[in-house]
Image (cartoon, rainbow, N blue to C red; front, side):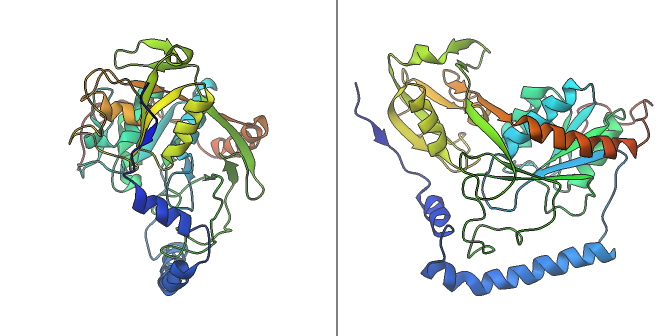
Length: 355
């Protein structure tokens, strides 16, 4: 059996994340820049509040899922859970996103056969997992307009990572945190914050095991199976008898590796990659034919076109019941203020790109 090894390709990012957890020398040196950013953030919010910068309201309930810290905190699993919850209630739901990491600039619908470089890895995962309409655009308000034009019956639009996108008015704000909390409490680049915290939001959801402050909690664990490019399932325990290579191009890859080991798997190697990693330039070592790869669902949709033998392990994400009750109160209030959605014919054909 090969000896375990770890391949480091995200050292700079990991170092910065560690520095943001403390008010050390580097953070102190960067603090003047953080103070400047704080002034710009406050001025921008004030301009929106005064109406000097345009903020658009669309004829659907807008629920924003975002965070105030740089890096992933569990937004995409939260979006998936919220969308599934709303669909089970019979609500017509859509999702809008900027499509971080995509190589296109237009507004477009994410289709099942879309490619991650065209629409972004997270929007593609959301569309394929949920089947709901998903639109991407640099301006989320534009994506919301296009979605409603193509799917006028939509009652709720979930905005993925749009907490700071004030050009789109929202009815409910959900802020997601992991175990890092707010780090050292300073704004970028001296700390992890995109904007000052605390600030008013409707709901706070902690996706880690040790919340740093009050809010609802969610439990996350790996599914009991893996899936390949053909949609075939294989029990996760079936991988316990062999050494596997694990890779993860997410904000905190070690979480994925740890959960695999907790499931009883032996990792011959771990390959942490930068968030939204592009596999089009080839596979990281060891990538020889015959090597068994396990990856996250987010990575799989980019990896499968180049390495269809890889197996993806889904993440199970379960917010506590009290969270759903609190969300429902706010959702009912928002829906009651909106007239029923129109069922008029769509002026935009499904899949059409807009400028």
